Amino acid sequence: MKYSELSPEEEKVIIHKGTEKPFSGKFYKHSDKGTYT
Image (cartoon, rainbow, N blue to C red):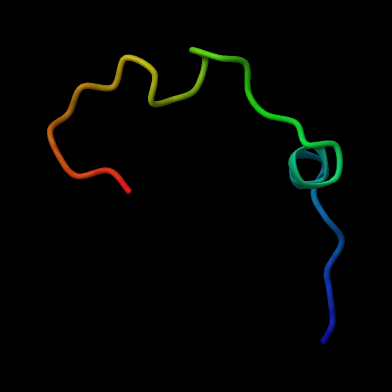
């Protein structure tokens, strides 16, 4: 299996266990009806 190099964002999340700041994501204050999974 061949692996590609991680992007800086992927490395931050996967290697350094980084996450976005609370209440700052694109779905904060998102109110459209629907089923979210």
